[in-house]
Amino acid sequence: MERIDTIYQGQAHGTTAQRLLANNMDAGVLRPFIASDGNFYVNVGGQARPVANATLRDDEWKHFDQAVLMAARQRLRGIADLQNAGLTYTIPNGMGSTVLAYETLKDIQPAELNMDGIARAAGDRPDYGISYLPLPICHADYQINARVLAASRTTGAPLDTTMAELAARQVAEKLETIYFQGASSYTFGGGTIYGLADFTNRNTYSLTANWDDSAATGETILADVLGMKQASIDDYHYGPWVLYVPTNFETALDDEFKSNSDKSARTRLLEIDGLTDIRVADKVTADNVFLVSMTSDVVRLVTGMALTTVEWQNEGGMVTHYKVMAIMVPQIRSDANNRCGIVHAS
Image (cartoon, rainbow, N blue to C red):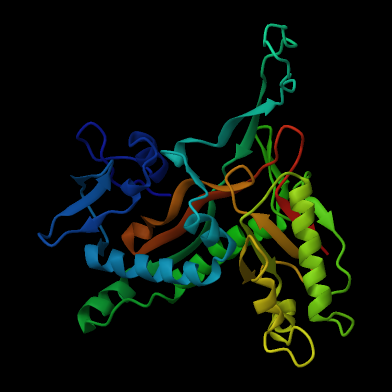
């Protein structure tokens, strides 16, 4: 990669990696823009700083960013639910961290019961341990050559965002796949990334029949979901719950709950106390269903970097490379006794 300008102690120099290192791994340094005054800037640490060169105008960056966010939003279902529920944990300067270190706590002795409270209870103290969650970068790349950019500005036509949208979809699909299907084969720094389908301490449940089979009825579907709810309660997790189903079960939920019923199976399920939503997610593999207690002690999204686009150049500036990337990792959790608010039915 050829050397391109950066800002470090008032001087412009360095490769892309050097630019990041010189600016505390702030990805904003890889987003130079041409401002309305014709000068070149980057936003680092929330402040605009001058640089020697930039490719895109500020409004062109906004055009790409909007396309990226819209494309990703269409593919994010489970990840968006965690964000909307506030089940997130943000790591400042996530580019500078490779793992999240977090404490695990074993339970202490039960409380004792007596009339005077004088008798000494069994002495105990919390037993803390340290675990790690890897924080990989999920990314997809594309490029724009100088002639395409010049043609857009000459004709006044907006830049084609197709490649940006495709890159955003690839990132979003990978994040969704990790959340629902897991990535337990990915280990780093003593930690492993788990999803709903491969988390060791999840609860499992056997469906009476696959919901798209002729043997399944609205009543058997209801019995399955009630059984899953009870499995969550038995593990001391009480909702609120969201039910995630694969695309091959969607039509079954829209069918009549029972013969001559005035409601669908979906409508009847949503009458279950504590079940707040039923979501069809295309990254849930066929014939699998998840009931998730939407609380932070069960699952949260660890975010070191929201969906971001950065750039660098080579070939003398004739080609500008773009990378859509994010540091967003689901963290599936259980308590000190390995109890978990996730029920996986298949």
